[in-house]
Structures are given as C-alpha cells and as structure tokens.
Length: 103
Image (cartoon, rainbow, N blue to C red; front, side, top):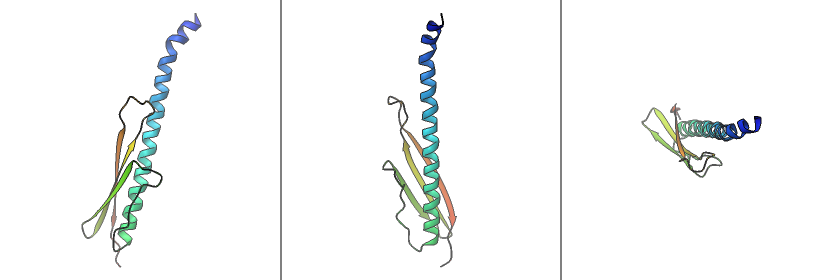
C-alpha cells in the first residue's frame, strides 16, 4: 500500500524540489545583479570617467552605466538558467542610483 502512494507522490516531490531550487537560483542571480549594479554606480559616481563595469564570475550578464550630471544610474542584467532544462532562462534586471561626488 505505501509503495503505491510513494510511487504516485515521488514525481510531484521531485518537481517541487526542482521549482524550489530554481527559485533559489533566480534569487541568487538577483542578489548578484544588485551587488554589481551598486558597485558600478558607486565606482562611476566617484570617478570622473566611467569605469568598465562587469559582473564578476558571470559571462551571461551585462552592466550599463548612464549619467545625467548629478546622478549615476547603473543597470545590471543577468540571465538565470533554471534547474529544469526545458524551461526558458529568466532575465533578472536590477538597478542602482548614486549621487555624483564632487572632484
């Protein structure tokens, strides 16, 4: 009896575990993107020219920095690959704004 219920529930539990691990992966990518955007905004606010922003350890992301004179805005985009290969990748976008420091 117990074997039949376990055989019926095991695929559902595996799918739930895959979804939970994918959510953790996306949350980790979001934190990494937020950190990269914050560091790029701070670096650009301190320097007179824009430093080359990057995502450390990530080849599937990009950071862009724009400035309007008083504020510097950095936008980081990271593509998070989910645990289940047949699901599409999730693009995570985070931004940070810093006030330009006087020279």
